[in-house]
Image 1 (cartoon, rainbow, N blue to C red):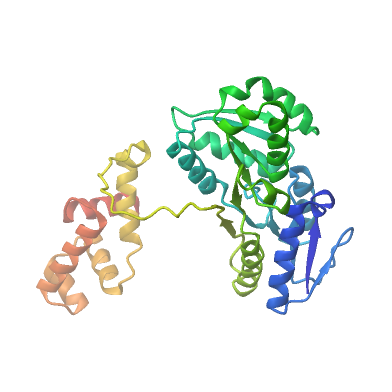
Image 2: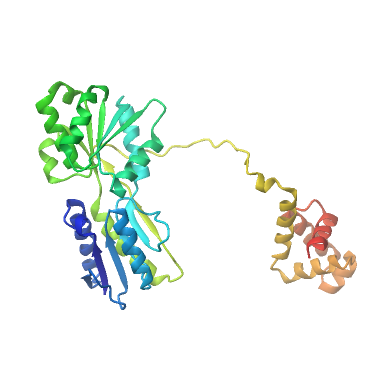
Length: 349
């Protein structure tokens, strides 16, 4: 038996319902019994799934579940890096999805972009904004118009600047539909010049397909991924946490084709690895970790300053074989030569 815990506010939303339906459908397909949990989480559950988006609620619930010995699986849009809690996660691959979206808009010549209707209390909305700022090009400008509980107020802030943008990205279809409807009434010419993109398709946007491009969230994959994580964690107890990211797809846009690329060698700049003392200890570490009993015996004899013939006699090898093993030890450890290898071993052991 597994438990399902839902953020009360998110549970009644379109996205919360779709995630729940996707999860329960996948559980039924696998014939895994489940129950709803609320104020109490039983100790004998095989796993706990959490469906949520509000950051403070998520952190509070995951902390309490951890205190009871549970490491839940979180289904959300963007919350796979919450500090101080142990959990696995199925979330949107916002990084990849927003990169693909920006590349598509750039190909259309759309570089002046408004981020409209952003809910600053939503982990997923903030994740989208972060990813968009991460991938924007030098010639791309982004400006955020937050939804602070009123889409009308959001539009009133956006409208005076509407003509300065050539594209709008909305976090959901409701913000996109509200924007299109208000622009239709207030400035139809501005509306026709804007490319409006919405994240996650819903029924309400069907009547606006000619005016709103949609990023499909592929909800069905969330549930399947979550159940797969649950089964994997039960089977492999040594796994502590796992994260699966589900990419969104932009309608009518083909996936990027793979092509051959030239990789020019780049010199690493990490000074840690350039420290001569570190390099010496790396050689010694390699020699101390040799697993071949014969080569271990050869190293022991070398430390005792024994000759090749003496080592051959003790190891029941020919002198040629001993020289081969010593050459291999020098080469694989990174030592300059036999004497350098023996000197380092003597200094550090």
